[in-house]
Amino acid sequence: MAVFRDKHPSSPQKLCIACKEPIPADAKICFHCRASQEPEKNSFSKNALKWIGSITAVIGLITALSGVVGPLKGWWSQGRHSQTMLAAGQKQAELGEYAAAFDTYSDLLKSDPNNVAATHARLDVAMLWIEDFRVTGKDEQEIAQKASELLARIGTVLEAGLTTHKGYREADVIAHLAWLNLLKTDLTEEDAEVERNLQRALSMDPTNVYANAMMGEWILEKHLSVEDARKRFDIALQTGKARGFVRRCQLESLVYNEKPGARAELIRVINQMRKDGDDLSDADRGRIHSYYYGPTLGSEDELREVLSAVPPDEEWATYRWIDRPLTEWEPFTPEQQQFIQARLDEVAGKRDEALKIYRQLDVATKKSPGTFADRIHAGEKRLAH
Image (cartoon, rainbow, N blue to C red; front, side, top):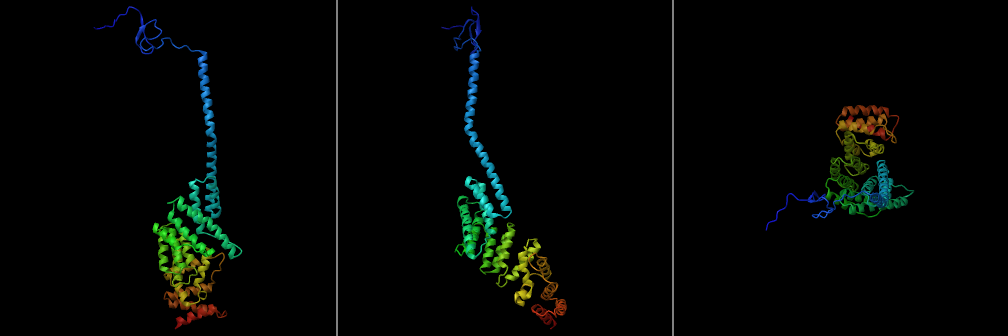
């Protein structure tokens, strides 16, 4: 049986304020959705309760945040302190104060052991310290004791770097461990691995600047092949890194090296340094300066080796570069400089020019007999015949 809704109800109606269905105009509750049809009256008590609830919520939020602000403030202060310490260590390292920088980073890591920047910075400065390690004392025993203590501290950091920060400059670190062992051998007479660590670094990175430069110096210190050492130094220089360190290794291993060919190699290196615009300390210039003066070398063959190491036109320029005013070493006298010029002319086959200088010097030194005068007279006699 069908049921039809009456479209024209007999009593007035209204729409429910909630579901919008028609309900009697005087209905207080909708029989469709059971919603009250009387609007809620604002009351002071209800509004007050709302404000009290909001204030209570704010107070609760502040109370909760108070437990976070303290740690945040501490974290911010620690960060500022770390940045200050890192900057101080970097400045010390730039000034060459490696021991002080090492201590600064170590102090920072005591309060902030997980600071990666400080860990890497201390590892870097430890390697710089190894490259320019110095220790003083009143006697060899005190020097050995101080060196042993300092090298132990540095060694601990280098070894830790290989385990806790594996991959960070790994070949560099291993090469510096080899050099630390060499310092131990030289200063404290401890037996430690050098060559094996250098070979290990080279196997990891065949062009590593430190491993190649250190291997070159190691080869020459052991009086092995000058040519093999040269190849190592050339590889290191080609990297374009740590050029000053590479040149220092070369000079340290060649100056006063008595192995045949070492003198000529030294002058070749100096000549190239002059052309490349490299720095040369007064101390090194003073040591190399003596190589040009025959009596100091002890034999004509040694002097000839020095004077024929590079082309004649470059030899004189290199000699003059060495002979420029020094702060701690006396330059050659004009007569000594003329003697060097005569020897260079002689080596270059300019016999007439060389003989002319020898004769002039022979006259100038007749009243000052000695080894120098004998060398001049020998040169004059050699070319006159």
